[in-house]
Image 1 (cartoon, one colour):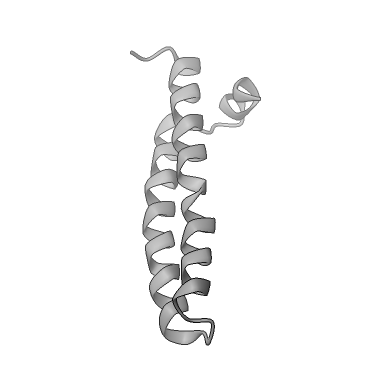
Image 2 (image 1 turned 90 degrees about the vertical axis):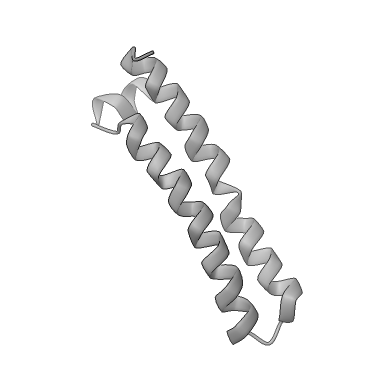
Length: 72
């Protein structure tokens, strides 16, 4: 899978950027959900955690792609 992603032009920097963006989006979604939805803090927490779980996946893909690229 990692080799195929690399062949498709996905770089480790892209994966790291996606991980960093997902942290920001998690915080943004938490703030927006807390202010706009009736579910209160509990619902906002669920949205923030759901999106925040993407970050480790993107960072792990970044590491795997970095190894595939052969960069030390």
